[in-house]
Length: 133
Image 1: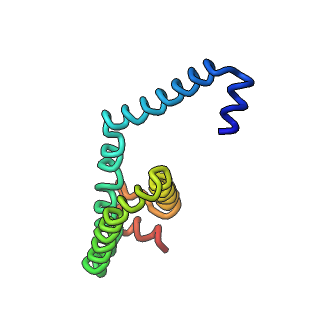
Image 2 (image 1 turned 90 degrees about the vertical axis):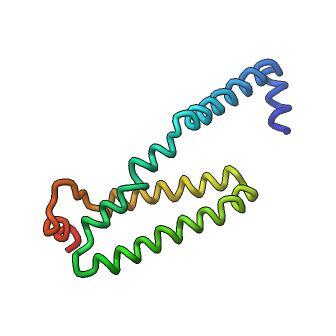
Image 3 (image 1 turned 60 degrees about the vertical axis):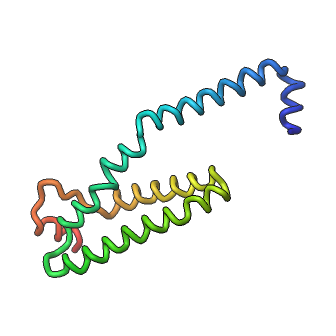
């Protein structure tokens, strides 16, 4: 509030109204476009929705594929349940904080994949296993 009063005295009320409404319009435009284009749904479908299942079937050795695949499936469904369970609680706490947490998880996921997940396209099981040795 004090900053607003200081800025109003320095730059004028009209300019603050123009800057404020323009910034809000730009922000809301970005949000509305992402809802219309369903950016998150498309991004999830192209990557995190399907790729873990495909990669899991490619990187797990045959002798542990059943057990490891079951454990990975359990973990996937557990964390999906956890996100569903906590989403409303987190949104009640802080909308911005909730999406900051989700953003942080996505950033760490991208880093994890970049560092530790091998590219499996066009590779044999033996070539993929070599990556983990």
